[in-house]
Length: 315
Image (cartoon, rainbow, N blue to C red):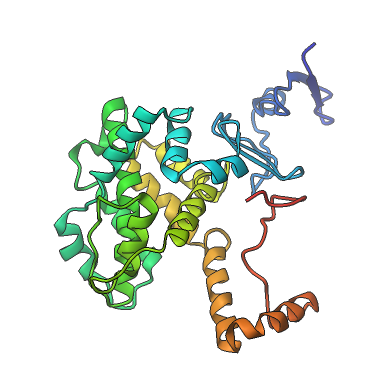
């Protein structure tokens, strides 16, 4: 038996009955009652814009799954590139598929010299790294003439591969610029997480990436890889619906992430850690937590939990 819902327009007495699938009914039913009737949902709290097989999120139960796999299992057993392949292809890669995927990603990490020498150098010395990142990501589309061929699956897949490979390079480049440090080129001998940390923090020839930090970075990438229909995903889908190239759409998602109510929360967590460091560092953490628990308005604990999870955040 199919679940249904009946909606009655009390102004006219007219009713319409529509099926419910997966807890969702088609809002076009409202237009059947009245072509001039619209549903007002400014925060999309009751609106589903698409049906997805990529991510399942249950905030009440504290569940997050990628393609059916619990996030805890993927963070424990998989690398980020395995998870990226899973999200893109629908299944975890075989050993041969993973080797091929890693090889292709590694060989696309470099960015055009004009991007590094002319585009990035045009920013003011104290430009925010995220503002630079958004602009640089959008500019990538101007370097690849096939970026607009979004209905050519082979071309589209190539742009996605380039984004997975080049985004860490651009992010590290923007950070190094903000710190007044010389750029560090990608190292194809390193893993995805190791390469990112090396590009970010390498100073001198004796720098070695801490394997614990590299694994932590890989897990961090996994935990942030997807989170259902969030603000950034919505921005990307809206821009993509105009048939923009993948780089422009990704820049739109990054622009949403730049906002303090989305990815800006991560920046707030880093600012909080810096404040704790100014208070005296590790020795003052206990005092800081006491202030938080006492609801001291001068301090806030950032970076723990997410408003969508009512039970606990599985990440």
